[in-house]
Length: 78
Image 1 (cartoon, rainbow, N blue to C red):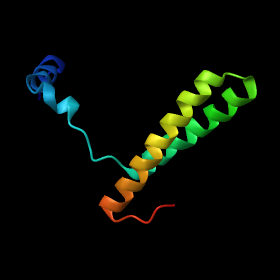
Image 2: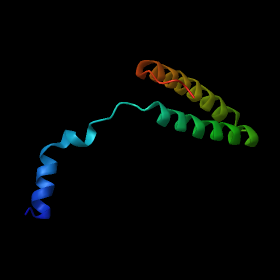
Image 3: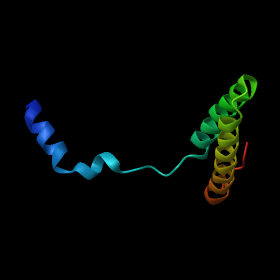
Image 4: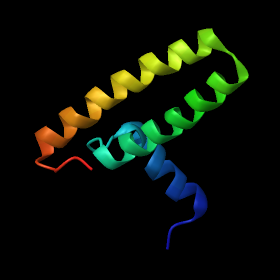
């Protein structure tokens, strides 16, 4: 049986294992877009025009990514 220190040493010997990324899931991108839509609505209500413009650009970028990922992964967009 391994001690905590031995387990930590084994994990820390391969530092790249923490940075291995899964393929981007279009649903996760869609959730992000939903959050951005909410922020966009709030900044518009509060009159933060500069922030609103930045969020609009971000939304556009992530919508493009979402549809691209759906096409690449053969998923029908929601």
